[in-house]
Image 1 (cartoon, rainbow, N blue to C red):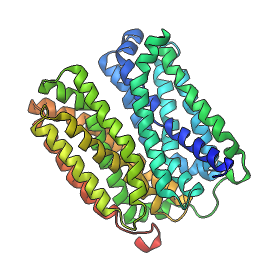
Image 2 (tube, one colour):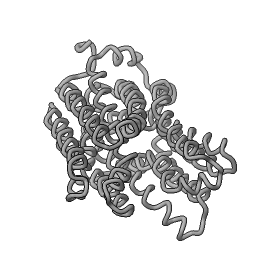
Image 3 (tube, one colour):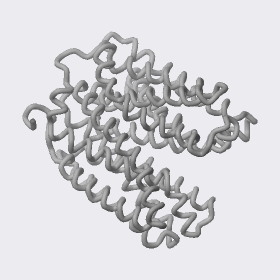
Image 4 (cartoon, rainbow, N blue to C red):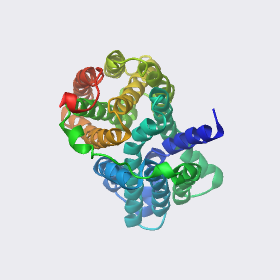
Length: 390
C-alpha cells in the first residue's frame, strides 16, 4: 500500500471514529450536566432526543451538498462542524448546550450519509472491507466515548464542560488528516443526473430503508433500557453496566468481520437473516432468563446487532451503481431509519408503563425483529438500484 493510500484509509477511519462520541459521551455525564445547568430529567433527556432528531432530519441535505462541493469536502466540513458543536455546548447556559448538541448532530447526520458514498468513490473494489472498517470504527468510537469521559474527568480534574469540549480534538485531528484529500482536484462536486428521483421510485430503496430503520430501533431500545431491565431483574448496577459494555464491545469485532464475508457474495440474505435470528435469541434470553448466564445473551445480542448494522450499511454501498446514488440512498435510508429508531425507546418505555413489566415490551421487540428479518430477506437479495427495479 502506498503512503497516499495509507493516509486515505487512516483519514477515513478517523472520520468514522468521530461519528458517535459527541452523542455517546453525553450519557455518562448527564447527571452532572443537569445539576450544573439546572435541567429537569426531561430537559436532560432532551439533549439526546435533539441529537437523534437531527440525525434523521438533516441527512437529506447531504446529496445536495455533495453535488455542490463534493463528497470529500462535505466530509471535511462535517468534521469541522462537529468540533465547533461540541466546543459550543461546553459554554455557559442551556441554550448553548442544546444549540451545540444540535450543531454537532447535524454534522454527524451529514457524515453518516456521506460515508457509504465515500466508500464507493474511493474503494470501489473493496466496498466490503472498508464498510467493515467504517462500521467497526463507528462502534468503537461510541464505546470509547461512553467508557472514557468519566475517567478522563477524574484524572484531569476537569468539569463536564472541558471534557465535552475535548471531543473536538479527535474531530480536528480527523479534519487535518482528511484535508489533503479534500484539497485534491477530484474533490469537486458530483456531476450527472440527480439521483433522488430514481432512488425514491425504487422498491429496493424501501426494502433497505425498512431494514435500516428496524435494526436501528431494536438497537436503540436495548441501548436505552437494557441496564434498567437487568436492574429490575435483580442484578447490581455495576453488573448491568458491564453487560451493556460487553454487548457493545462484541459489536466492534462483528462489524469488521461480517461485511468482509458478506460482501463476497451476490446475496446477503443468509447473513441478514442469521443476524436477525441471533438478535431474536438475545431478546429471548433477556425475556426468559435475564439473570441466567446474562453474559451469553449479551454476546449473542452483540453479534446479531453488530452484524445487522454493518450489513445494512454494506447493502447501501453495494446496491447503487455510483457514489451519487449511494449518497442519495444513504440519505433516504438513514434519515427515515433514525426517525423510526427515535420512536423505539419512547414506545418501549410506554409499553413498560402500561403493562407494569418488561414482558410486553420485549414481546413487541420480537415482533419488530420478525419484520426486520423479512425486510432483510428482500433487501439482501441481489439487485442493482436503477430503472430496472422501478
